Length: 499
Ligand SMILES: *[C@@H]1O[C@H](CO)[C@@H](O)[C@H](O)[C@H]1NC(C)=O
Image 1 (cartoon, rainbow, N blue to C red):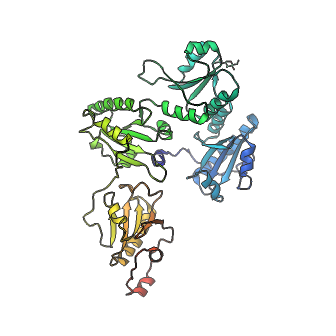
Image 2 (image 1 turned 90 degrees about the vertical axis):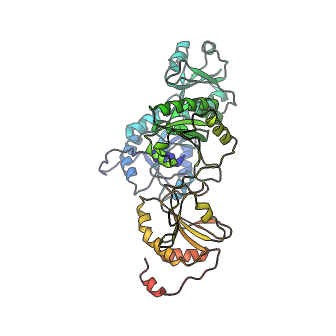
Image 3 (image 1 turned 135 degrees about the horizontal axis):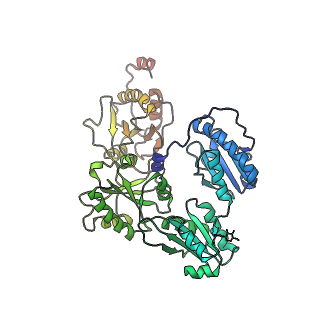
């Protein structure tokens, strides 16, 4: 999920203001010593995890301070706080902070991502919405009818009482889910008008093209987590079009599998494909999310290694299960087979039955897998064979063609390759991880990521040492599962010129 979301993250900050004095008197400074107490003290608190050197944090600073001051007047029960997560890395790690700034909204100590805007007004509006009533009170039948038309998806609690556990759980969900409108009615007349029993929770949806509202009645236990998960599943139409606005719902859904149709919308082959896709989406609703990806989404196409010429085609994306790091991809029917009778249905049922092997994006093997520097090129197709060979110690650099640090490393890496060229049991290898997928249990977060796969048991280790020939050499010697002797010849000279 992350990877795909990161592709979409757009710079949200406008023109930088000068760093004139920012009056931060209403922003609470958090450190490990006061963090827990402060979070416990305020049932509603927004926390910014920042780093002093981060440009977007500097831009947010005056807005954040202003928002804190404005809110203090209207909602003194709400607090805005910040924590230097560079100085206090443990706090950032605890809350899964990956980039700066990250804002988290804590309700009764429970964090959720802040997804509002980054101006003072946007922050204030977002918080005010959370401090108001969580659900609109529907007192009359007309209120319900109007409310159903307020958005494509609304959720109504036909609750017997304005107190008690059912209401508390319902309110919790209503407060938490930002993108769904919630209503509540305690009136018998409204319940009867809706043909619902007291105690029912109903999701009404009507997407463009639908003739009328569809009502889905919740049948699980009355607890917030289950209701939220149920809404997460049912709030989506049979086919969702992928966009910045829908990606949160798609990848935040409790359903962790998505079937994607890549398509040149408007072309006749695409219209045909969409028809087949919809039928299958309907038949598998609730098990897998069906997503239409227009060919204009180059980032997403590249991520799956889809060539526009090959569309319409289908892939499944599966978010990582425990023990896996990356998203798994499954390659489905392509333009020649997609609309053939039963092809897509067969693919989906094989996937859902766990019968499919993930597909790994791969470039073609180069003519010389080992280049003139003795560095081995890995692609999706030869990765396992080379890296998982138990008789070899393998150092792998995962790089991106555009990455500056990777370019800096290249001559050093070539030198290292030369040095180990004659050692059969040690392989110095590299993989363009933007064009090839490593196995899903390998975590490649940034570039370059350098890992060592030890001979015999193939445990993998991260290399975080100096990016010098000397550093690599020492690490390999220390950790190798094989014995080898590097040539001594010309050692002194090489050492003098060492990069
Ligand atoms: C229903 O009544 C409550 C309490 O009088 C009021 O606050 C609320 O705005 C009413 N709902 C609507 C939709 O008018």
